[in-house]
Length: 239
Image (cartoon, rainbow, N blue to C red; front, side, top):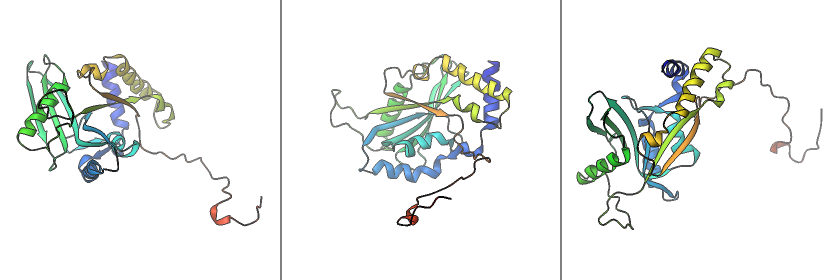
């Protein structure tokens, strides 16, 4: 627990502000992507298990995963934060639609004795929102379940990797030890898919680096650039 606590503290201290972005800034792109029929549908409901701040700050790697790796088109984008509370059987949720019909922030507040089966809760939440006509219908064209209204799911869980710690020359040896130990503990504890009760769901686990920020090496110098397009047709010349 000591390594976990101090590893989190040192990791957060090194996290540049650029590692977090505002989800609100990317809502127009998410809505556009959702309607872009030139891109195949990745899933009806794309669910990210992540912590979203009160100011809508979110890890840059989440937005990168949706928009940059290979655009993930979905009918609804869900960003779910699970909060464990001290009331043993507490079980409630809040929904923030962010003035959209398909980009949704959910806070799940679960007592420490409650089941963590997120897939069950999210289906109940979707049905409640459908009843209130807050989100659009997503009845599948084909299903063995009569009157099924909820479409397909993919749950995305991101795991940080410590392989890039050695490249952080600005970081002290102690910080590398604490942060690396914290990530190692993460890898040997219960997998997130099991913790959230998603072992029978469609889960994609993405490996992401600790630091996405681009750092420049001050010692890198240009030696030569040759055979550019503007030089085409000119006789080759070597210095």
